[in-house]
Image 1 (cartoon, rainbow, N blue to C red):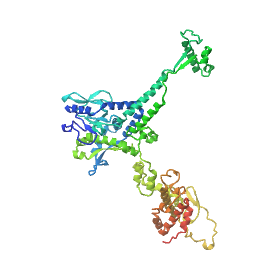
Image 2: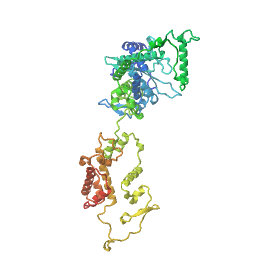
Image 3: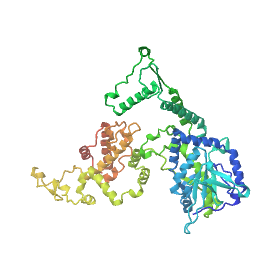
Length: 614
């Protein structure tokens, strides 16, 4: 819907703010005053020359378009300002501010294209003119404002006195259109440091270099054209004995015969006619002196130094433009196609953020805050908001996957943060039932004997019946049940046949729980063994086995904060917590010191020798 109507007379002058934007009076004498001031403070000659080089020098156009395409990926939101610092606090939850911000630069459908034009105008002529026109209602329904972004040459003042008005060139039809008084027109420009009201741009200091590039290219093209225009001259002596036939001179007859022979050689390359030379008679003294025929090269000599001069000028051009050297030189395309339009964070901060900041400040001052006031806010309330930018699609963040995984394994970051940093939506998380099942699956992989617990098997959806492990018998699965083998032959002494299991035997559940503690400790140690130098070299090695391929210098440091839940395991099995912790620490330190992988049997043996008294 149209958010702004006719401006009050008090609003015809832009407020004195240090931002590069100014509103224009829409009708009357103020139009002529603004137009005269514009002509006195602008120099359109260099702006026209800048657009000329943008059109004819690909090495200039390419990087400017690259920056503009990157800027066009920015999304917009309303942001609140901190009352104490005046800095943005992030996207606002205010419904009115959000709704109005969504209409900035024509809404999502047109915003990218207009941002691209704004960026190019900022870089080439150094200024752009923004028009916001109310749109007529359709079937009684209010429509969003129409936004138009134009270079300075497409906006001009017409008329005189009270009839003075602005006209602009319609970008779709090319026709000159009068700008109605209800519209808003404001100029966004990059101010020159010596004259703030005058526009400046990245291309302006590069114009002399562009002239060199153009002249060098024209010189090279002229030399190439001279070679295409003529293959040279062939002078024939009058003393040649060559039948003239129907031709007036020997030279014409010879040329006709030479062209016929060339045509035969081209059409029949595999025949003798293609390799047999053309034969004619000439006096012996002419042949001896090499004067029967003389070739004259009319092409201009190709001077390689001109190419060197052009290459040097292109290198200077890359150093002059306000962008990274690799972008200006056209080597940024070495990135993969997933990140072709993304830039490093440092590039964004230095080269793109200032441009977006100036555009956002201009729109905030000239349209966004007046629109908030028109929607019912007071001027003081509107001043607490500004246009902000979401640059997620622009900035390529470094791959911190391994660091994040290590921090997550150490319980130092939450699941929500891990998902957000990896761009995974919240609704992709497993529900509680799926999470429990997958956790059990990972535990059972390390300790398959846990399937003897009917609760574990049932939770995993396995319909099997397992003979009690305490019976000490072996078995095999048949028909979905684990059936006991026939009773083994009794070989023990009669006095010991009826005794229960050896009290020193270690329960399978204790071994499985101890293994989880060991795997956790080894994973922590593996994460700490990774450095910038070796990160990525052992991608196929699990983190809990990295100590087998990377030497561990200080096991004590690597195992810091490990075995945090050993006391709970000890309490569940009625063990001495200090003794269990000491056994696990000694066992894991030994693995790190020797570079050996975890051995279940060795861990079981260590647990068997542990003092189990509490």
